[in-house]
Image (cartoon, rainbow, N blue to C red; front, side):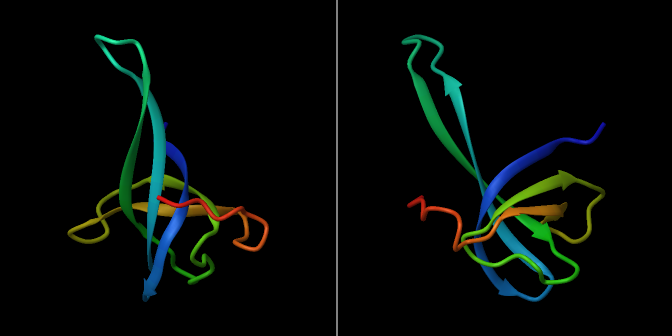
Length: 87
C-alpha cells in the first residue's frame, strides 16, 4: 500500500503542481515532549483543482519529475471552510 498524508496547500502558482505542507507530531526521544515537524512536498495536480489553503489528501507515487513523487487524491476541505493555519 502506498503512503498517504493530509496537508494544507501552501502554493498553487505552478501549472499542474501544488506545494503541500504536511504537519506531524513526534515524541522527543529524551524529553518525551511532542514536537511539531513540517514537511513540504511538490504534488502533481493534473486538473489544477486545489487552491491555496485547501486541506488535501496526497499519495506517494512513482517519480513524475525531479521533485514530484506525490499525487493529489482528493480535496477534503476548501480554503473558505478551512481556518487559516499559519505555518
